Length: 185
Length: 151
Image (cartoon, rainbow over all chains, first blue to last red; front, top):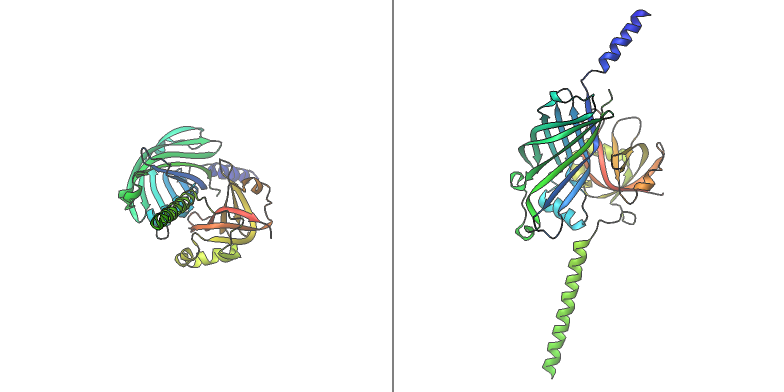
């Protein structure tokens, strides 16, 4: 009886260890490629992004289906998919990287932690190193990741025709806002 | 006199054409996404069949289904709600972890709230792709702008 109580105690302590993955399949990623002085907004949102964080190693991964970006206008969506990102060929964009200051984040304590992120963004068949800063917000057992960075179209071989150069900028401002839940073991 | 008439006629037709082209361009520019309620689906199948096809050959399935209006029947395994109140209906069986995630169209979001887990349902949505199993949580086919239809 005593041994089993001890076993239970040890096991429960072990399961509350730091090795924990957090994930979401409904992460929100916005992009805004509106050129300065453009008469209309060039932006879209994807509400089905996958985001995974390994709180122990600081590994951070995103996976986004390009066809999942939503737009106000059907025409903009068609141009985005057919001409710019060519989603029939390159439907999946991934980011694989790390939170370089992961040790300074306490995933079990509520708070707002600045995060330095570094990794590789694979989009439209091209891979580029991305380095940016964001925030990890721990609240009520959930992990919220917010960050933004710019993706230069040239780096990803995304060509914007001269015709729309007054509306579409040479880069997209990507805004990430994902709230992750613990991955149940 | 005849010449003037011809010229006026030409001008008249030219103006009509310009207005016509202008209207077309305006409508095309402002065209919103198709309302799926009335749209005819490109494919009608069960969620199990769709998951099976994607799991077997992702490339072929992508070519076949990406961007197409799908009408899927299945059971509601779960309903996810994100921080902004948007629902995702997850179709699947309890047998395996694979599912079809149907991101609900904003026009249908309120009604989605009343759906019962475990009930069978028919959903119309646009296929946006496949996420193979990375986390040990099963693979997903994703549908956007989904609405539930009565069958």
